[in-house]
Image (cartoon, rainbow, N blue to C red; front, side, top):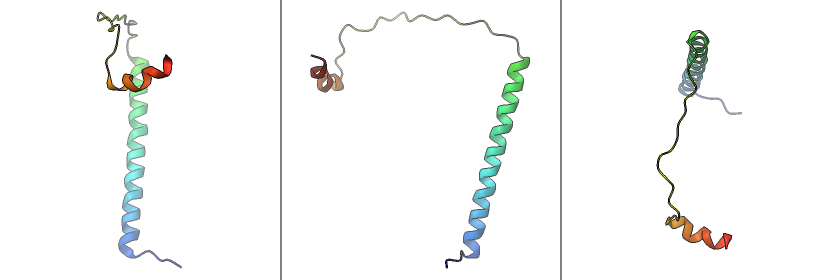
Length: 71
């Protein structure tokens, strides 16, 4: 039966504690952000439009391989 050495056990413990700390901070950050959004003033819905017209024909390298599939 495999028995981890003391240094391996310490490494596993450190990694586990680090993972738990990251998880805890992530959940705490999520709660803080959600609480802030609830109390924040409602935002206006943004309108955006793209002023640049897409080119009529694309000259990408991948088009060379995929264009015959749609002909």
